[in-house]
Image (cartoon, rainbow, N blue to C red; front, side):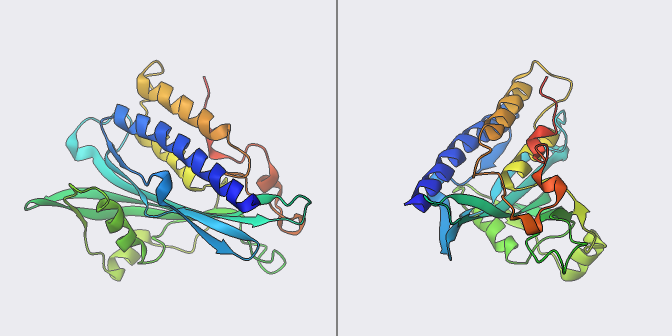
Length: 265
């Protein structure tokens, strides 16, 4: 029963978050392909469940910067992520978020005949460390690596594109040699705040949907409302809980959430 309640809470939060995100994208004349709440996949695991969207979120005609206006400066960006929830031994039992991972990939659209080919520009994945800390002390609890995680993501990007019945975009072929040249040193781990899918959406919004010089503009006001929306849902939906043996000081800090790293004026 507790798991069903938490899954309903996740769906409710997803619906609200999606509404705010869509408002920001619309205000910039971009396009959002984002699974609705009925397309959230829940999978049972021992003493808990995982949650993730059926396909990645896709931003189309996304400005390279908040004040970009030319068609040559438009991007297609995918974000994806999963969430792991476990039940503790409390009475009544409580369910907490214990693991997250996420990905972001940037593509440049190029016209090809009657369609559009997407050329991979850059990608990052964000990990949450859950290993034995006695064996992996150099491994930051939250960290980023510059890479595309798994070739299975490319079919998922295509699935996202095809959720639009009018889609004319295709993912261009990327050979392993091209990936190696693009990403360079893929083993470098950059410690970060907690960057889950919701955090990624805030970063994309801040860097691509808001003109920092237009504090009174609709996009800027929408961004502030979006941060508030995420920040008011800190409980189980976004707050990774750690057992004492694997805590790091920063992982328990109140300011480790991405949406707290932006000005609220």
